[in-house]
Length: 126
Image (cartoon, rainbow, N blue to C red; front, side, top):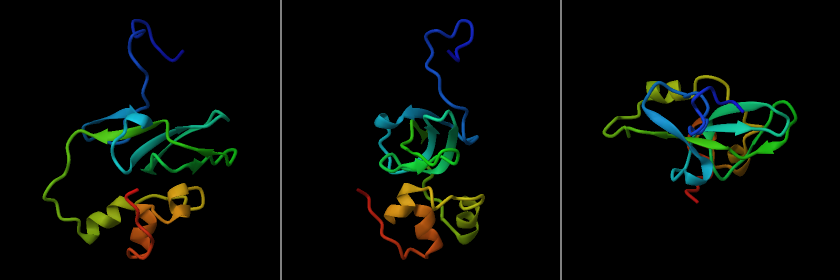
């Protein structure tokens, strides 16, 4: 299912969330703290979140069921020596973040929530 002709040996992965080099990996193989997460709900909906945490759920907008990410995005190139100024910080927060459905926000560890509160939330590196 979902495989085109001649693709029997290839594993299916979602579309890329960004243009930078990287790849999707199954969540259990992800070694980072957070990244883009791809979610597949039992109701049939799928969604991507830029605030994906492998240890926290995101609730489906369709049925409100909590879902752990199925895949996590791994960046191929790490940004080193880049200053994180206010303009870049504002850029990372473009678009809506559904804090009510974010398990990491509810636990007080989501980077989005921490940035919005000026670092006033809890931070856990687990």
